[in-house]
Image (cartoon, rainbow, N blue to C red; front, side, top):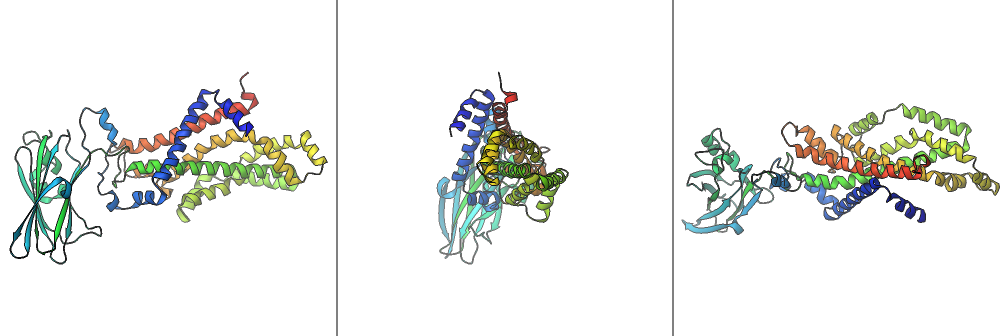
Length: 450
C-alpha cells in the first residue's frame, strides 16, 4: 500500500499523467453511474425493445445541443395528449352512438417544420370500432380534412398509430412538398415556416355505450437528447453510456488476464528450463505466426458473438503470446540474483520461489505494459463490432459504429452518429496512454529524468 501511495504521488509530477487520471476518473464515474441509473435489463430493453419503446423518438435526429451552434431554432419532439392538452366535447348521436370532438391548439415557433407527424389513438371498445377523422387548421386559415379511418385493430399496448406524414390524401395534395412542409410552411413561400397557432380537430364516432377514446398528437423534432437517434429511433446515448462499462470491463479483463497468464508461463519456463522452457518457447513461436483477428472472426461467425465468449477466446490465445519471450528474459536475469540463491539455501520450494520472489520482482515493469494494453483491447472489441461480430444484445461503442457504417451515416450527413462513439474510443485510449507512458517513466530506470 505504501508503494502504491508513493507511485501515485510520483505520478502527480507529470502533467500528462494528471490529464490521463482525470480522463480515467471521468470514465470510471460514468461507468458506475450507467450501471446504477440504467440496469442491464433496462439497457437491453431500451436498445432492443422494438418500436413500442422507440416510437416516440424521431428518426435520425441530431443531438439537441446542436441548436446552440445554429442561428435557427430547431424543433424538438412534442407529444400532446388529449387528457392534458386538448378540449373534449361529447354529444349523443342516435340511441347508442356518440360523437366525441377532441380539439388541440398549440403554438409552433421553430424555424423548421417537424420531421414527422403522427396521431395515436387509444380506443376502448368491445366489437364496434370507432370511426375517426381529422381536420387541421393552419395559422393562416387553411383547412385540411384527412385521416378518415376505422380503428379496427389496437396493439397490445392499446394504441393505434396513424402516420399523418404518409396520409395519401395529403401526399397527393402537397405534391412535391412533404406533408410537414405543406402543413407548417407558408402558402406563398413553401420553404418558410409560418409560425403561429395550429388547431387540430379530431372527430370520433363511438358506437357502444361504454366505448371511449383518447388521442395523442406527436410532432417529431429534428433534434433529440444529448446524442441524437439512429435509423431505428433508438437514443444513441444508451449505446454511449453502456459502452463505457463494457469497454472498461473488456479492456481491463483482457489486459489483466493476458498479463497474468503470460507472466506465469514465462516464469515457469525460465525457472525450470530444459524441456519445459523449450516447449513453451516453441509454442510461443507457433502462436506468434497465428493471427488473432481471423480466429476471433471465425469464433464470432461459427460459434457465438457474445462479448464474453470473445474475451475467453482472446485469453486462451494470449496465454503464450509474444510477450512471454520478453518476460522470460527478465526472469532469466532475476533467476541468478542473490536473494533467489538465499531462498533456495533455506529450502524454499519451486512454486514459492516463482510466486513469492520471482514474479513480484518484475511487477513494476509489468504495470506500464498492463495500462498501455487496455486501449488496444477496447479498440479490438470495437473493430469486431464494426465487422458485424459485436454482441447482439449489449449496446457498445463498436455496435453504434457498426450500425452507423451499415446505414451509410457519413454519406447521409449523420456525422454525430459516427463521431460520438469514435470520440469516446479516442478519449479512453488517450487517457490510458497518458497514464501508461508516465508509469513507464517512473518504473523504467532508463527513462527517468535526472
